[in-house]
Image (cartoon, one colour):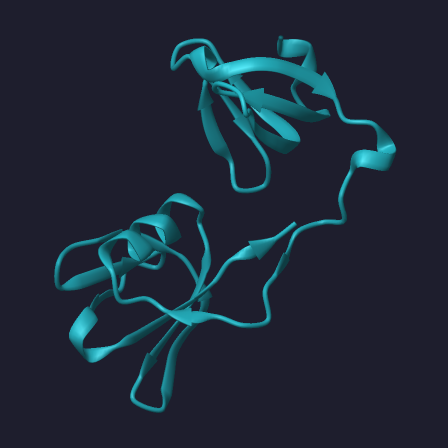
Length: 134
């Protein structure tokens, strides 16, 4: 399957109805038993992959873009998802912008660590996430 690396593919995963993933196959990692797909570099375990096919030119979507509307993160799972999907996050403290389009690398019950190493308190800051579309 290494011949798919660097090529646009469509990957069918799991049980029917299949989860369908489209994108460039970034890596085929035998040691970790995962295929890494897409600009968000989602690792898919080999055991979950049912079929991989070449993505026809007409099936290739426009490049992903950020949604114009964001939402304020309040729940633990929202922070988890922002980390997992490497979503763009803006951070505000009152009416002052602290960070624009950064990513979160980790979080605890009361704090968030940004990609630049800043550790910010959840209670003192507003975290606005914008997911990717496409």
